[in-house]
Image (cartoon, rainbow, N blue to C red; front, side, top):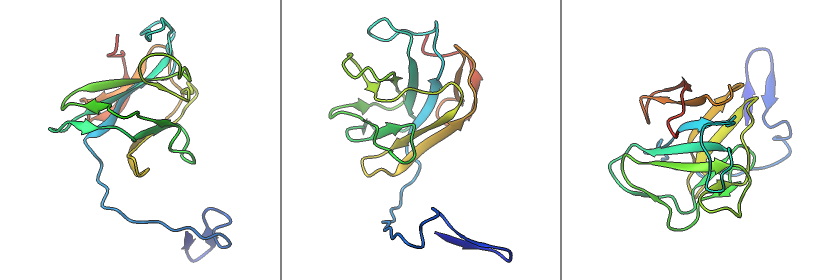
Length: 166
């Protein structure tokens, strides 16, 4: 990408003038599945199936149709959007929530992502099977046992709150 104004012209990424990329455009619209709430510093709020206090991400289906998440992804790295891929058969009915534990405990029962959340701040990305970003949140330092979520659910702005998973 090349951008220019009266003072300067710049490529992004820096080597873009030497490297070629192709992009296919889609009519991607922010979907009915959203990142609704997360807890990046869980010391005493909710335990996973193995009895551990791990960080978690809550998705919400704000739509009116069941959505098959097979092949969708969660990540905390914009350069690798496929860190966690939802397995075949994971579906969300309308107006339902789904918890993904961000703990790198892939051998445990349930949905466990292969990344952990940083309480000092980072980003979370939700993409479809074609790696189109459906929702993303960038957050700053988090308070232990206080989640960051949308209010109202699915559509509101993110704010600090008492976790709803408890």
